[in-house]
Image 1: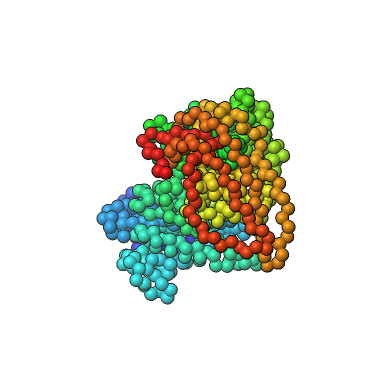
Image 2 (image 1 turned 135 degrees about the horizontal axis):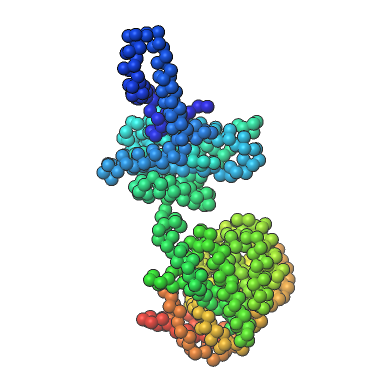
Length: 638
């Protein structure tokens, strides 16, 4: 088998140095025999050939030691350097680079880690023997490409050097003699580039290697096209030692595989294993065991004042650091494998709170966010049903919110789990609609009953016509599929009125109420007790049939009947939720209901009235409970 160790610095020495080393070993081993050989030569010369035996033993021992050392640093399948050899070469390069001042490029060390995408399925299909032959072909390609030097920084096809700043690197680096190509195990390969520390250059080189691997390969009469992902890490920008350099290159490669971006450079903000994030993860695990993570509940109300449900939101006050953003610790839990434990914690707390509210006569639905990993876990639906039965809570009182990302992971398996949840009677909602990459065909097949428009569109719809168009199209799409529409992030009266005119079924946001702790949410619900509907989703009234329009004429979309607003006396203000986006309190004067404009009749020309700025009502909606502004906040100007 061809060996590719001639370019790797950690391998045993060859050539003149090896011959000198062998001569030294022979002299050291034969030194005790020299006096005896002199005596034998003087008196019994015919016995001198016997001294060749110990010399032959010394030579054989040296060869065995050399081969053993080489095997310890060589991958037995491909002949490339293995992980240990790469670490030795990286340590040597880092030690050499540490003695060079930081501005010099030769003091940096670049590492590219390559992994073949979906190689396991190919290995299972063709067999392990075929997979091994394919790995040998890949190793030959990588070694040949880097040994030729045409893929190295500053090289151009044909051997001509370009104007790249790395063309001034030492000739050893430019010629590829110091580049180490290693197989890390399985379908992972690594390329160590001493003296190359520019992330842009390393990304270009990584993409060139991926393109080299993507060239068709012939194996057992089949033409295979391989895909790969690469992670890039640089000393000293991203790591201070060889082990950290390798680990962080693996982190970057994992991000490239999950994001399907091809090449990623290490980013500390996305690394879940930094000391700070590891400490945060440990504190989160202890907080879950001690019950220190709380649930706050934010109401969802219809335009006639009915409370249609509450959403359970996580709040965690970390000792010594204050409140931690849910995006920070939830994302950490999802990337570290703690998400199932966190989901169980939230479901237990929400179902217990539902049971307590029902014992007080407060029948309301609570929505809980679940991750795609939870939905794809076997037995998830049965676990939810058992938890509801254990606390004697009807399934209709619980709603699970999923995101569009679930549609990309495993849509068939997700649909089966959601179907099972629906058979148990649990409500389903599609959260953050419009921010993912969902397919309308998959959306139609999912058994969800509610669609939530993301706050990123709702909060800007008054000032941005494009966001308003997205909201309007989302409402029409959801209603055409028979779904209830909830708008998130409603924080001002203009947005409320515009959503009402578009036919949105319910709203959620700071204009209605902040997310409240369980005791404050209980007080809020007691005030609203008379207006609480049964724990089920909002049902829109049936729309009358619209006669078909004549060809070439305008046909207005069906309008939703205006819901009357029943004035009620505002409840006492509740304590504020200290949140950086808390809104000032709403005034308390009553506002008359405004009739909605009627759509033009069939056959009439399309109205062309210019769009004017939405008029802010002179007073709030009387059916909404008032809120208290946070401290040190000035009231909103009229």
